[in-house]
Length: 202
Image (cartoon, rainbow, N blue to C red; front, side, top):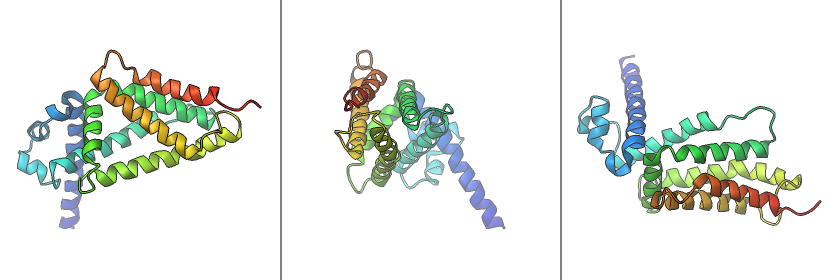
């Protein structure tokens, strides 16, 4: 019983750390958010904080995992009664718009995504799985929209989802370089508009 209680406390503390870290990174950015700042936010030493994670890289990976969970809960909800394609587009655009409000997390995501191209990096499997799951969620919705003539059927759904990821990730980089010039939301909305305007006449 004592072991189960200790385990539960450890899980709860880890969750507390991640939620505090999410706020610190959103505020300070990837480079500005030190392990010390995160440790201070939860009343731990740096060594005490890293007791719950194998490395700083794992800590930051888990921050992104929690961020995804929060985003799904916040922006993945439907508006009720809308077409699945319209819901998917609206949800995606809401998320992109929200990202402009949390530049620190965008910086963390982009930096870690580059680092994670190394198969040995702690975040490698996270990014591979994340991308695959995101594409799979959209594939069926896009395929149905193609059958109904809502969007172009000249491009396979699997290619469209790859293109969408490329546009979103690429626009994040452009936005970080030129925040006043690059409008992530506008460009992603334009991508969806292109899918609709290029559909075959019925």
